[in-house]
Length: 482
Image 1 (cartoon, rainbow, N blue to C red):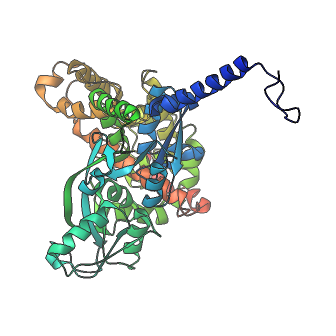
Image 2 (cartoon, rainbow, N blue to C red):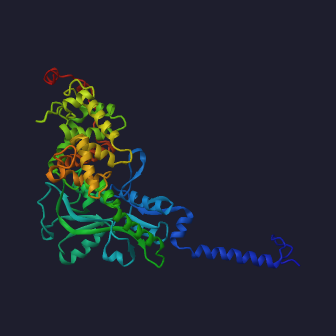
Image 3 (cartoon, helix red, strand yellow):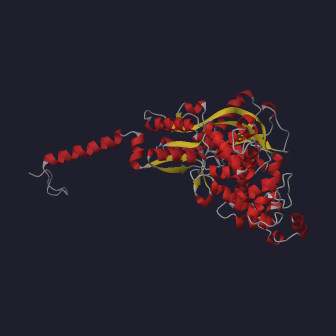
């Protein structure tokens, strides 16, 4: 007997087999529904993370490769879960929250501040970073306000941000405050609008502001509006804590192992100390002096980034080919006479020879470090060796290891380099006393100059080279060198 009519497209099937098929299909459906979030992610093989493009979150760097603090932190989690990472970018906070609510993303990693209103509907991991929030204005545009009572003019912030939440609360105490919010521009653009004079003030997170001031030194701080604001990943509320628990455990391990501290140092550690005069002078030098030597930096950089080589040269000589110090180093790359001879440099005052020699010397230092040291620590350690010598750097690495630090991490070695000034430490080393605080400042300055050059280059703001000027040989300088 057939189970269906003759007109049906279904073939005849014994009832017991059909019932078995129905139960089997419904059982499969129950398994999929019963999977928790973490199991579903591992089944599909992709972790979907929502973010917003910015210098502190996520962006495309050299060779169009994904990079950024949030990207690296999320990529390490995806790797530990054994899945691929997919960054889903939004241009508005409300779009991020919509994606999270509808399950289009698994969590939000976009430098999100933990606030009381957000805790009512979101779950946050433990903080992986703490920042300050600053009231920012353009230097010279007005007198610096010292507190909220002094603030006149318009404050502009991103709609839906914690800055807007804060202003809404502040307005209860300071009703005179004039402020607006917008979905049309992000925090980075609003900072530029303040520079352009479109708005009087904005509120910015300290790590974002520190990066921005490398290119816009006229951004000035009026005062700190909030101290020690925690930054964390945001998850949708609900009963399924499988991924959330894995993320909480991951953040804890990253803190304990020092990986988060290293990541914070990589992106933000070198920009916190801001010098207005130095930054303005450097930007002016990129316009007026750098074109004279641009071709040489690009020609002799080899596998180094030419912008890094140019940053080293600026730190050494401020791009002055006749620079000299009391210790006897000279020229654009401030080479010692023995080092210059080893690099085949006949005249340290010749820009082309100096840059070629300095590039080769830095390259050799980079190569002589142990193979296990990875980037960017390898480059920062090589720069320290350029300043203080490879022997003293090795002494500091040994002290680091003795004290339980990682001798292959710049953040750990940086902490011990100044100990080379102290007798109780340097008397136990091979190369003895050194002014170990100097390479620390040296590397941090170069990193800041390098960041500014990268930004100017990506924005198309670096001038073209002046080949004719650069090729001029100055006889008086050559005679002085000899």
